[in-house]
Image (cartoon, rainbow, N blue to C red; front, top):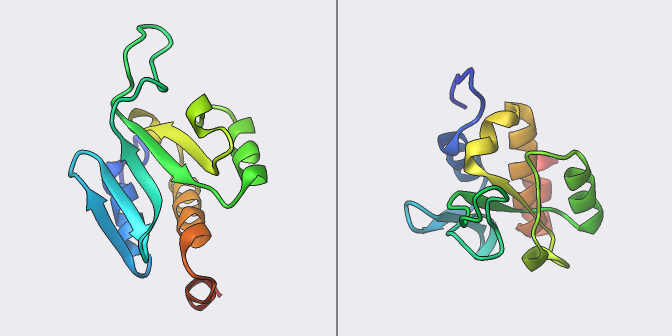
Length: 133
């Protein structure tokens, strides 16, 4: 992780995701997507009509979608409040959202846990067991 007093950054997310076994990075440099054995677990979204700034109405350009293990995990994360959120587009899907600009609101341990849990929820069980014990 960067020793950034401002908190985690995009580079930290990339380093955490790419350090996990069998992860590939796809998408574009601006909107990367991380997958394990072809199953995406974290991705930067482009501006979409379902995620807009409540003050300006502008589409958010920096939303990161992160897979969570299930609906209870999603609810637990969302109940912690900002910086986590969702949109109606993700109703029924095990994803939480965070803006890149808000990554600094997480501590490095929380970010590592969320990224690792996202990976583990999409990786084959044997790979997860071999990696995390």
